[in-house]
Image 1 (tube, rainbow, N blue to C red):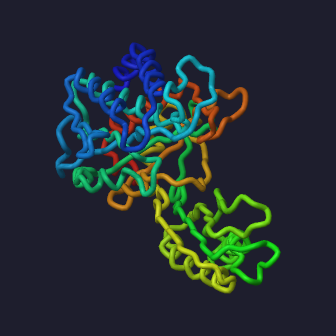
Image 2: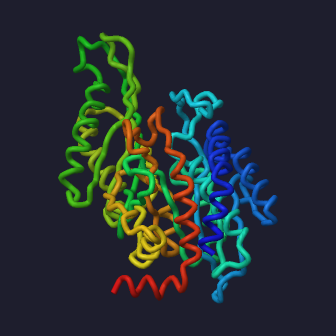
Image 3: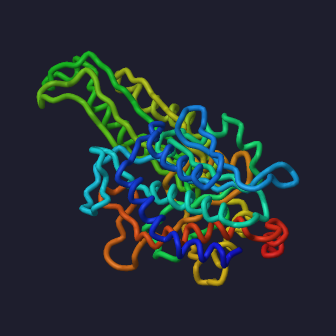
Length: 397
């Protein structure tokens, strides 16, 4: 079967590239992936498969082969949405949608999973039931994974796997680690209000800008003294807005930022702790405030057995394909699936090995498209392994 997959890849290598470029040209934001969903749906149907859209109309899943004896399926997931940012690449396949671009590699993820499904569909039989999961809305918190879970399809999943583009790794490498591979990510906004006044008489009003400055500097500093430093907890502000005139204390202002941690138990404690700290530093200034705290996603925690299964799929015929990888400070809503079933996420090398390594979410991010074939090989190897759990436990010793 692996030889048949190899032949399929030779015959369809150009298709993978064309699919990815078509998706890249026409990016769509979270929960608006209408064209993307139709693109994937049409190609699956052309192969005789029966994709099912999610209730919201974007995203879909597609089952291949009969379910396993327990009625469940090994599941492979790709995310489909783009980012609200302008692309600054001059490639002929650059985004044609102003202010929207695939600067996180979701176009590649989708093309890889589509290729995987069509390659598997070309086989005479499969050793296990498979579910292809094309998920919308990964780039918004708390993520479209919760919508997928709410639809009930996780009840038919035994294990779940995903790949995410990594521009720090060369093509041909896949980064794996057991345990946390991403971090929890929350969003916070503080809206300030006061009566305002003249900067010559700050004692006659509540100095809103001063209160903002205290919060900007003191809240992250105090938080770092209230949580275990080994949890890799980081708070950073990304926006601060108030006033226009140099000689007027404004009446309103706001600051926004993110709060990330690599530890699941710490994540559960952060919201009440942040609210306590904010109150302790702003209340003495006399400025009124309102906190908007949005819990994002937990860390992606790769379980040992799934990681071992993943490792075998990556190293099939090439022990050097595995790369050790560190825990990322970024968030990924794939973590919500792992609250329900075991699984693992790997980092797919997309760097050519030459030139700068352009990071995710940069307007110049792009991939070496040879990575598409690597991704399909890894996903199909996951499906074609024999007796997954037995072999994984044996490798774990």
